[in-house]
Structure formats: structure tokens, C-alpha cells
Image 1 (cartoon, rainbow, N blue to C red):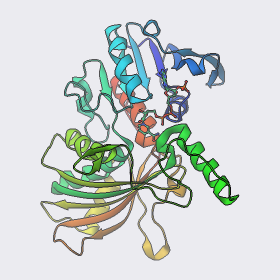
Image 2: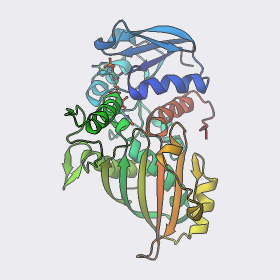
Image 3: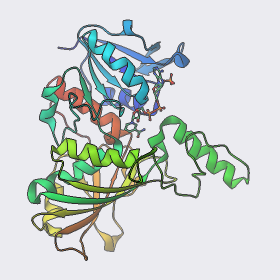
Image 4: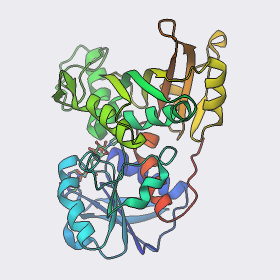
Length: 339
Ligand SMILES: NC(=O)c1ccc[n+]([C@@H]2O[C@H](COP(=O)([O-])OP(=O)(O)OC[C@H]3O[C@@H](n4cnc5c(N)ncnc54)[C@H](OP(=O)(O)O)[C@@H]3O)[C@@H](O)[C@H]2O)c1
């Protein structure tokens, strides 16, 4: 159905992983092209053991019948997606540029796969912190209807791309050597610190990252009445976002029922054995596609509250895996996650 597969942002943290996933999942294609900025002109990427040139993103790079998986900054996606669609391509976009556009479906295949059918050329993949939360919410919402969510995130440096990962590495080394280091992606030192500020000031004291969790959750579930109170925090972890989540449901869900619901849900793995010190942590979830859930408890302070801890690889399920799964939905391949 799609002749050419085009990976935009192929040199970035998410784009590099898109390449690995296309290999791992044996994604079907006839021709493949890799695009990035002029900074990457002359570079190559290796895909399925073969070297390909990285080409510069420009309108002529797109053709009728192209399937595009794009992982670029918002402003780049805002500019190129319309001209790619005009030339007949379908774009799966990882950036925030199109997520809240009413004409653009915002899709998490485990939650709202049917939304993909309504696309008009662009399909958006949500913010990484939203994606893992809505995958975990889905079975609880179906069973007991979630009315309210209070969530605090512990977001890894890789959420800020290649530069974020480099900042944490170099900043930690410098701190331990008692040297100065000028961070390029974070407003404060990240080594041995937490930064309760991701994105920019957006709404009533909440940041843009926090408001993405509110608005994207409501759009994905098609229910503006779900109330979300988020606090997003950057932590000195290389990869994998963690979230402390409290949901309040219309019908009470017990711990035992929640454990059963999570265990039966696609894309979720339960690790929940406190006495034996087993729970999801970035070091055990890194490089896997699933959303991991543990520390499942009934809320001591409200009758229908359920608290749990949720960890997922932000570069995989939070970005590249979700986008490749959307592309699989588009070509009608059964979408599966690798646990
Ligand atoms: N990191 C995450 O956990 C995560 C999760 C969900 C969504 N996202 C979203 O995914 C997108 C990519 O994030 P990332 O973390 O992969 O960032 P990144 O590591 O900084 O990579 C950005 C990519 O975009 C390319 N690019 C930048 N400016 C360009 C331009 N003017 N023209 C063409 N290509 C350009 C870069 O190419 P060069 O190498 O040539 O500069 C690079 O390939 C962002 O919108 C981000 O918000 C990221």
C-alpha cells in the first residue's frame, strides 16, 4: 500500500530507535529514505546491515504514497508535515505540533486504535509521559470509569533528546570531578538534583509538559470530564520515565481486581511484590516496549482511589514504539508489543 518509508529525524534519540524497531519488527517496505537537518548532510545511518545517506529534509523528499515516521522538534514538524501531506504522503508525527489539532487523531494503539481511521494525512503520537499513563489507565477506565488522576512524574534525561542524555553524562562527570559544566538542555544542574519544571509556563501555574498530560489524556479517551492534576519532574536518570499515579474511579476497584485487569491488558507487565523488593524501576524497564506497573495500593484517603507506580521506556513506548505501532495499524499489520 505504501511504496516508500521515510524516517524524518533519523539521527535523533527517537529516530535512531525508530530504525532499530523497523528492523526488529521486520516492518514491510519497498524503498526507504532517511532525512534530518542540513547539519547531518554527509552522514550515514546503518539499517539492516546496509549504509544509507542521511538526506536533508525538503519538500522534494516526499512523494505520493509515502509513509512517513517523523521525530523532529515541534517547529520543524509544523512546517514540513503540511507539504509532505500535500505531496500525497501520510505522516505519523512524534512531536507536539499537531497533537491537539481537531483534524489530527492522537493515537495509542492499546487505547484508541480506531481513531487512526479518521486521519487526513497526519496522525500524532502523544507525549511520552501521557502515553505510559493512558496505557495504564485504559483497563481501569473500562472497568470502573476514571474520574480523576493525580500524577507526579520522574522523567529521564533522554526525554530531552540526544542533547539531554549528553548533558546528564557530562554534567555528572563534571560534578564528580568538581568542575563547572554548562547544561544545554536543562535550566539547572541535573546531576544529583531534581528539576520540577519541564517545558514552559503554560496555564495557571502548570507547565506545557503538565498541560500535555491533561489535554492529551482527555483527547485520547474522548472524555473532557476526566480530571488530571500533574506535576512533572526531571530526574537524573538516563532513560525511562517513572510515574506515581493515583486514580479515582466511579466504581471501586480493589487491589486484586486492579492486578487482574493490568495483567490482562495488552502492553502492560505487572511487577508487584514489595516483600521481595520487586517493583518496576528504570534499570529493569530500560529497552523494553511494555508499560510496567507495580506498588498497587488502595488509597487510604479516599473510598474509590487506587495508587500505583508506573515505569516505561520513554524512547520506546513513549515515542518510537508507539509511532511504529501506529504505522503498523495503517498498513493493517497486527500491532504487538515486545515484552
Ligand atoms: N525523547 C523522548 O523521550 C520523546 C518522547 C516522545 C516524543 N518526543 C518528541 O520526538 C521529537 C524528537 O525528539 P528527540 O528526543 O529524538 O530529539 P533529538 O534527539 O534532538 O532529535 C531531533 C531530530 O530532529 C532533526 N531535526 C532538527 N531540526 C531539524 C530541521 N530543521 N530539519 C530536519 N530535521 C531536523 C535532528 O536532525 P539533526 O541531527 O540533523 O539535527 C534529529 O534527527 C520531539 O518533537 C520530541 O518532543 C521525544
